[in-house]
Length: 111
Image (cartoon, rainbow, N blue to C red; front, side, top):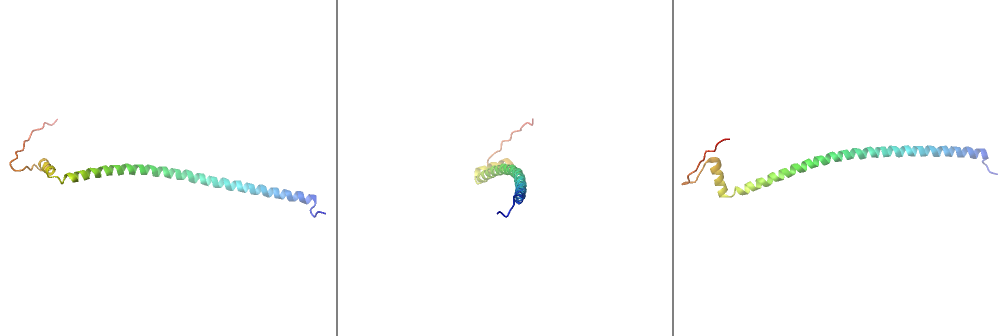
């Protein structure tokens, strides 16, 4: 009645079971390789991100120092527009005094 005999059916089921095991093994190997690659990439990129974070912190620190210096220079520039401040600098650095003003010099002892 049936064109497959009992012996052929059992042989056919053995072949399909072996094929299923082979496919399952190949799938497990593929998944293991993929997760290995993904893990390696993740940890490698984490290290790069940590290094970049350190560089960013250093640059932000440098930027804050530069901004403080810029603020100080802007303040000095605004003071240079004041005639009284320029007169103080002339007296201090160049010993230039207005007419009629007598400088008072004191001897400072060096300690």
